Image 1 (cartoon, helix red, strand yellow):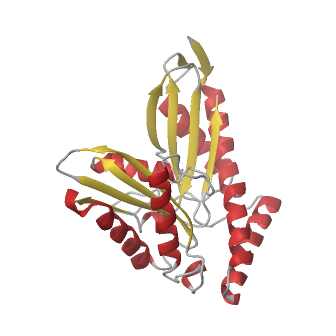
Image 2 (cartoon, rainbow, N blue to C red; image 1 turned 180 degrees about the vertical axis):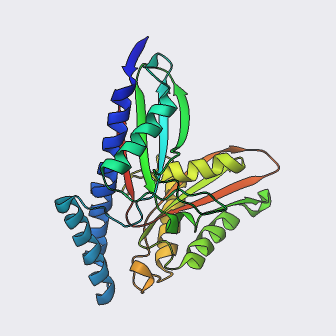
Amino acid sequence: MRTIPRQTIVDTVASMCMAAGRYLPDDVLDALVKAEKGESLESARGILAQLVDNAALSSKTGLPLCQDCGLGVFFVEAGEDVRVEGGTLREAINAGMVQGYKDGFLRKSTCDPFTRQNVGDNSPAIIHFDLVPGDKIKITMMAKGGGSENMSRVIMLAPAQGWKGIREFVIRRVAESGSNPCPPILVGVGIGGNFELAAINAKKALMREVDDVHPDPKVAEMEADLLQSINRLGIGPMGLGGDTTCLGVKISVVPCHLASLPLAVNIQCHSSRHKEVTL
């Protein structure tokens, strides 16, 4: 049985949060640069250029990429042959998130749902655990802002609606969202499972790199179809028109109950902030 000190996890998570808040992942930055070059509308090209400049300034100055530094969302794969020494894994991750948002001067956004009183430290971290073979812990962190999260939805479709119903719902959801999620967006789609698993899988799908192609050719074709259809909406960067409404669509498909067709759409803003570490 391998042991990992609690403080190692705290320090690692704190660093992840600070890095995610300041440095746009290379795949997202490359997608913005590519979109700028291919954009036909001059005003849209200007907005995309500003987003690229913003990422460069954030990296240079250490200032956050966005004033909405998001909630700390974590997907954790914990090996069966590893344990945390000096505390629990959940507590260590939460403590690291709190430390990272404090030391990184990142905005704290969690509040009481009724009084709206700010909690003050961005806790609690939202953590999804998977138990896997081995003696390592893989932690993937996403900083998820409110504007994009508010545009996300879960629906239980009738099985007979099939791909046609799924396609229509996803495109309509993006169209109705308009400028609210700060496009160009990334769209995670969870199909199957049940009510909560579809939502988790839709968010987890957003962790895939922008240029990643789904290994199943049929699903890859669905992703390409949705991406093309969404960009035809003409919402454009920041909702001001253009060819680039969406940088990528990522779909997760799992089996579901024969009486239902769960569907979740999780929308991410252009500032798709995430980090991954294996201990």
